[in-house]
Image (cartoon, rainbow, N blue to C red; front, top):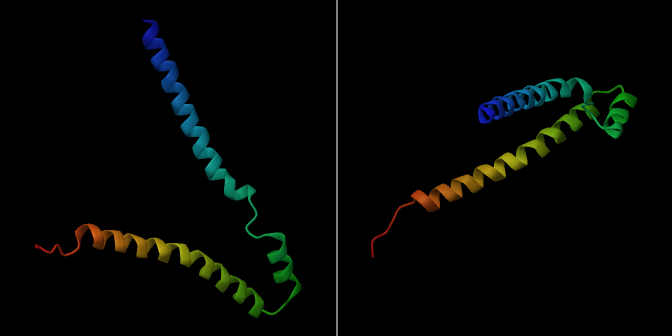
Length: 88
């Protein structure tokens, strides 16, 4: 009987933790700022869109490099594991 109560209590705690975790990450974008202070000041001070486009291109460049590296590494591991096996 005591063991069952502990299991139910533990299960309730797990459900509560999952709900809290989900709510935290759903509400986090509303609290967070999207740009650092330096980027915001640089983009707001200039009326031309050239600087804003340059910042956006830089963000895309910085975002793409890790994905490319992981893709190349994954392909290399795939080739090592399933590559053409030579019989001696």
